Length: 461
Length: 108
Image (cartoon, rainbow over all chains, first blue to last red; front, side, top):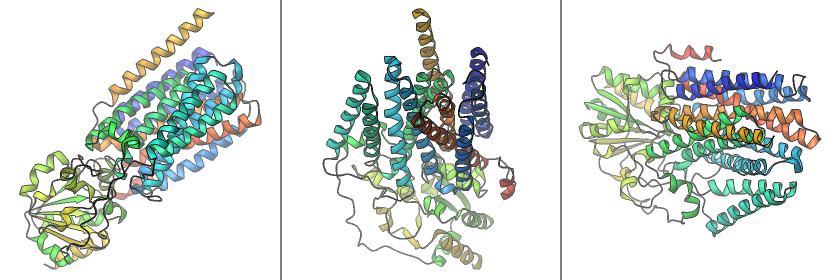
């Protein structure tokens, strides 16, 4: 296959990626967009077999095919079997391995080129190794946080800022060392320090900011792919990587805006984080807890009910039960809507995915800006397994980790019912003052059990 | 020779810069609902580093290079294939009129 033909087909694949991103930006075309992207990636992968070794079968072709088969056997079942609730961490993991792959590609090419590499290529290699390694180890940490294998709270350790700053200097110095003198030892040091920096960079990020970090690391991986495309002089990799880097950066900013977070604050949280006393002096105050019957009565005599679903609903797999409750209320003439916070669940849009899975009518899903003005006219708000997204501390407590995040103003409604498993604070680890207010009723237990009991109590009324 | 190399570099730079603008442009207006699938889809697209991994696996001269390259092939495949499949699963949920839960049969 000639270079020109290869480049032309590569261009077609690149256009597929542009169309894929375009398609993914609108609900109607999103699924098709994803398929177009998959087609582009398949084309790109197939043609490289006909081009890379000047038309002859590739060296190590069997091993390469076996590796692809192995990767598919790992990736596809993971993607198909993962619970929708755990999807964000899977995306984080996929992103991390992509970053790792890009770093490995650049390292292998560097080993092969040895002294013949031009300075520009070495710089691109160092960039790929640094950012790819940061993306890899950082994504692993975000995975561990989302999976709650490790604490979701910001991890702050003594002298943390100094250690992080020193590591960053080490990364840059070792990178400079590679560029000035070459050799594998500096590159190895550079890679290891970058891995360490990735870990330190993500550790101080609090649970609520993790989605932003995943999105940012995603953009990083895109840029590493672009840089390794430069190392290999492959146009397609430059196009695909840059597209993801640019769109990922915009997406990160949009997400940060939706969550009311400063991107700068999130990124440099590592450097500015101070150990803060947790806001936890309120523990021992009394709360009003009710029975399923109390809740059913409140709901039955309401005119307008807003359901605020949170991650707890997803964990309990209560999507279907909550829809049953909503249908039942609607049949009794109660007006029902769902108030969807942009980051309900673990990521922007996550809750929409979960509720769509339970066939909740799309019109009932109301976004935050639209539902907030209606809370004063709402009789009952039913908060199902949500906490941070309705926590007034985001408005009233400067310095708390979610301060500044837009919230659902459920406190303006007549009554607030919380379905909670326990008094444990939410994902961000902050106490919720709303739980102690007089208008609030708590119903403890697994969200699905509680909802089932409320439904049967409501039927008996 | 030198000028030829130069123009190649400039061409790559142009491609890089234009791709930045296209990337900014295509996602500048997207509702929060689609943030997660869009991120996941973009994530799958950078799995195309698989192409680079295959190229270096072909070029590999030593066992070390080959081993690292094959590891890159595996990781990149997981990123790419898994990424597209999980994005498709997410988007399957967004389909308009429900044919209820029998949807799972038509996953690709």
